[in-house]
Image (cartoon, rainbow, N blue to C red; front, side):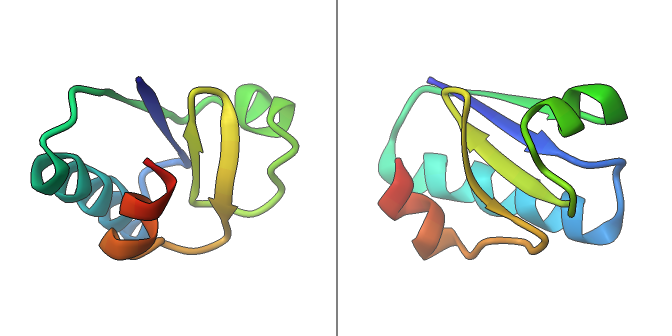
Length: 75
């Protein structure tokens, strides 16, 4: 499983990454978390507001840091 945190590294981006790591840990899932800060790649996902979270190439949320419980539902 590949989880991508899309954003430049703002506080909300960091919180989203932290929440994703915690969700994976709590569920005992093996996944790679990748930070994507390249604006062209982010726009390629159709995301106009960051942070955003993509799981296996599918954008699950954008414009906010999703909660741990939300991320667990998507996993």
